[in-house]
Length: 420
Image (cartoon, rainbow, N blue to C red; front, side):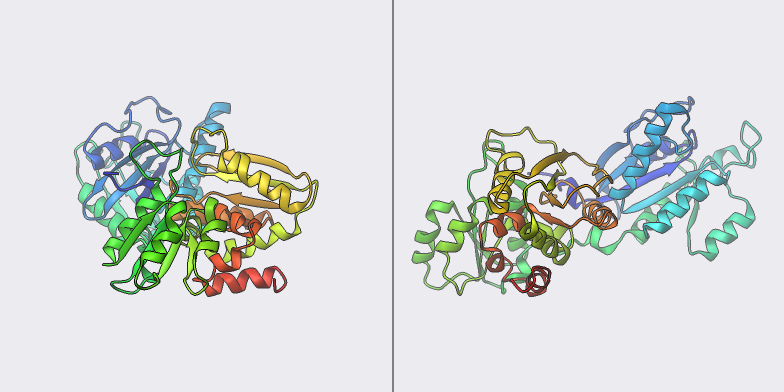
């Protein structure tokens, strides 16, 4: 892998009415034609994403959205897509041509409700005081500026056409970027002492292209190297032999969830053990809440409905983990048939109230903000959520062992499970 994964990039959403210059602003910031620009309102349909390195922030993803004032049946679908993009946005730009009305107020309220940092870009400053239609451009009415300033909202005057104010836009992005979106938390290096050793148990995943490892495994190796620690990578069949050859026990064993039962049997009880998917639950979401959600598996019974949620849309394999293996293990654990639905893609439906449980993938392709938004959606629906690694470890009978490195998560699981 040569580029920073999308899921580890700061996601910057560009929002506003049609024809205020959102796409032009994006093209000016990235220095190339990432989005189609036209005087015809509604040119942008689905959100357009562009990855790049943005000075002084670093690796980012820009999300160019459709106009919030789009009209008609198709426009309503475009607005819905734009609103859903909020769930994967870390910093929002509210672009206006100088007008300020209900649409801008609605966006500002949506940002505030999500506690999403945002600032206003007063675009088209090159048109001076009045635009072609008589509306003021490039500046906001004084009372609006005062109100925004009183709320701590930054306003930047810019001209995407002439390139004016773009440095101020970049600086505002850097100023408002959440720390967790730029300085990513450790994946596992904080679990291993300096100079320590982690053994990574890596089955050859058929879903990974030839010559590559899957993303969480690559991230784990890089995190250990950044932490000045050592790692030993083995397949599941070689774990026991590798441990026998070590002069001292490793500080941590991390395995693929699908082989957690064998890895737990081959790893001495005194050696901490967990899975890549559980590490991803901590990196991308809220491990304590996801561990609490895993206890709901113990209450599943025949006839219950479970939603399997995947953030990516990979081609399903013959023995696919989300579509075949986890449903099989859940049904075996529940002692009867349970109804399984699968949802794949960037957006997770809010219609979750009919489910007894949501089992989410590790979320390696989405950012932390998106995963936390999915957790909030499940919470609003009153549905517990867990993830692949936690669910698999529970159905295999080794979840307390796999949560051993994370006492708070283990306590949350035991409390939700009634002391199990």
